[in-house]
Image 1 (cartoon, rainbow, N blue to C red):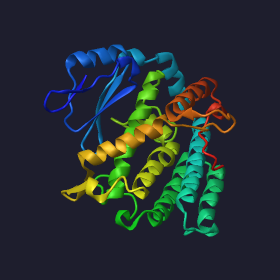
Image 2: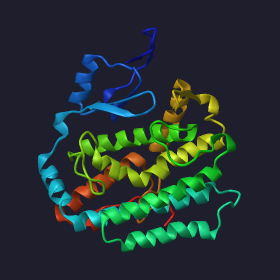
Image 3: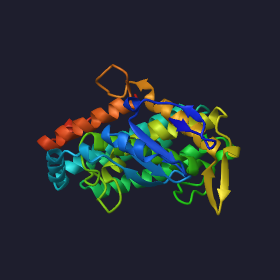
Length: 314
């Protein structure tokens, strides 16, 4: 049962229908509910008002140490990680190209602009190390957000990426959306029995779900960036849905609700996300399938077994 500030029941949901629970701000759960969620392998994720991940409550029943052993062994195989990183980075760039083309309705970008991305794909394919790939991806990200800024309405113009504190409304919304995407992958990774710490691109460090950060990379343009652009262009997310607190732009309660609802709809929508499979699947199904393919790749030490996503931008 979900209650409002007046202790009135506003919604009832069966635990069997819940994948993860995301709490923002000062929302609370009863001890009885936390126990029930844990028994049903439903993880709880806590976020600040601005969407920054704080902590989680996870069921130990999800860990599968045989899978984690294979994952750890694969982590120390540089050639394996390099090829998976190459696949993820290439796919992300393809999705960025597709998004820019979709929203460039006035033809502001020309062939030369898009060639920057194609050239980066070629560079990524030739890279000899993960560090080199991350360098190409990082430089291209600056170009991507520069072009994206040209395509948003004037009220939402921004000057590059700013994380925390967010320097503008657009970045504030991105931070919030990426936090939700991050938690989705944390939940899917745990449900598949893997460790959050052994990634394939980023080096692991304390208190960070490295594998979640890696796997969400290719989905950022599809799930978060695209949803945000549609909300802004359709006039559903306005400047009035943000406030500036101590030089940090944050979404208001209403703004968070609007964006979270739109993200939920996008997450549940079905699309052709797998290139050689003409069937249409939801993001959650596809991401879960990706993680299962990664588990097979860990077991065989064969990076070609990992399935990247597809949106027709290849």
